[in-house]
Image 1 (cartoon, one colour):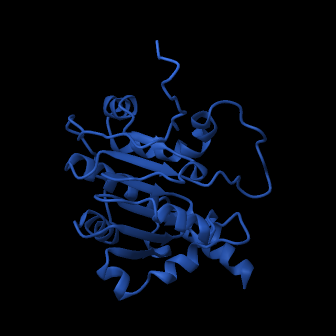
Image 2 (cartoon, one colour):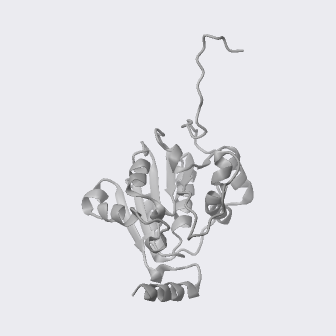
Image 3 (cartoon, one colour):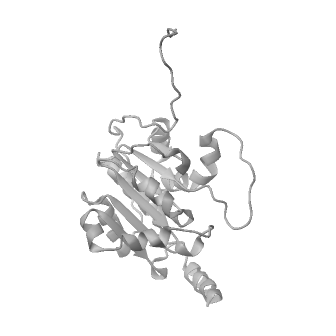
Length: 241
């Protein structure tokens, strides 16, 4: 029992915990990557890369490439865990209402894409092992203030739904031996003041590259989800003309 004189304090569920390197030998599935996707992976795994801001339309494998690269960094003992965040913005004008439960349970609908990608890339026992050991951390942006992310990768998904202030918050959380992947589709923003393209353009220069901050863009020709998707996107683009 604690003495009355001892001070107690609440600890955030997302407070930084020192992690040892993952001991299991992850069996990461190799997918039929395109040449452009292999180029992204090479960039992501480069020892000098600190941030990759990737822009691309739906179906260009942005998220799974970030997850794959993160798993490779863990397997190579260059990272100990994966942080994943999406702004909890509901698509279009349709809402699902109030979600009961803890912050982790509230985030569950928004972290499902990460779980899907993990299951696609790893055997089920390896996914369970990473989850049980708290190597996969889904965190709302609102809980990032004051967090110091080191020896980890951070995937900021659906970044087209983030404001400029959100990017500043996330990018200033990154510490030593960390890699940040920012993934966004400028065509599918659900907010009016998206900062995604502004931040992409801000760091789309040689000076940023020299400092380890890179931009990477996929086009319609890089769509791998389905053959018809490229046609669908082109038709919707015609509406805006």
